[in-house]
Length: 441
Image 1 (cartoon, rainbow, N blue to C red):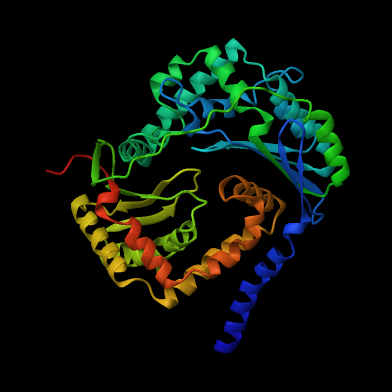
Image 2 (cartoon, rainbow, N blue to C red):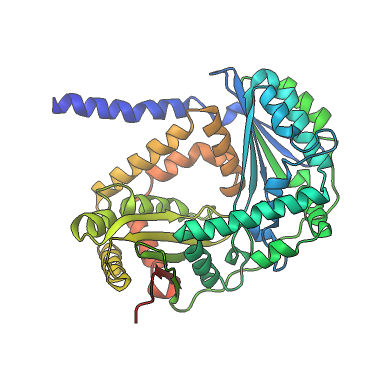
């Protein structure tokens, strides 16, 4: 029975590997439209559907004091009317064609996603082209969406304990770099944007040369290229996209921030450590470390703080996906009645233990399997393939690196993990965020 179980587990791990290997770098067709937009196309006939992801290289890092939150605001405005599709019609036309859409904004990118039957590609291309070329910045819609964003911001601060703590801690961890402000923006800035601010920002950053379009699905590549050349390629803007020049100075000592919230039921602990950008060679080892420390009941922090000491209800560790050096984040929701000082002491003890003693080969092997299964699973669907191709193109030095990513994770050693632990996880390189009903004396 144990032999059979081992065979079944091995088969479960191999199956995603074979699915992943079925898609090769050579299967991806790459085009550069005359307006500078890069297009990645992957034919996939597994289902009669397709998707289109448009990755715009614009996020909160491209903003400045006074206009914070504009990137996120455009995520709203891009659905609110263009020359040939008046307000409200974008979704109506897409849904009538059998499609659906979404969007998200981060520190680095704004991404628009469309899912649709393959037969609807021409309609989707028309919708996308019209809002890129002729977005309407209607005064009434601007004020309406301004109110929506302000409500979204206040609701998040009221209902999510992590929101206020994370915003306060990030703005403490970053003193110079634009990663210091929240993606949604500061309230005063949201209230103060002008229509001229919006138009300038759109004309600058929604330049097709600043975007990567990823299309995956049951489509004919010649038809796709013909449609894009006809509808997207004529759109061109001459604005120069300014580089982000600011480099965050090295942190020279621990920083701390307290947030009090009367209605909080459990203490919240946050630890932020400066780490390199996603293209850096250490990014892979840091991702593996996050799995070892917090992914599942057998992980180091969960086992110690939740199971054994009963100090916490939840623990998590995550490595940032970012253009510039960002933060490795630990979050802990404390158990009822536990003091944050006690939780922090237990966290430090466990982290020091792994820094000094390293990890075992068994832990490393288990973490690799867990991470790779998740990675391969993302390549099973057309949606997952589009997301990963775009992510690797904009964050990891090019889509071609997607096809060597598995080998990079397999190559991580216990020495690599020990090295990143020693290099980045010092007290002087971190910011601690603490949230409870009252500040401890």
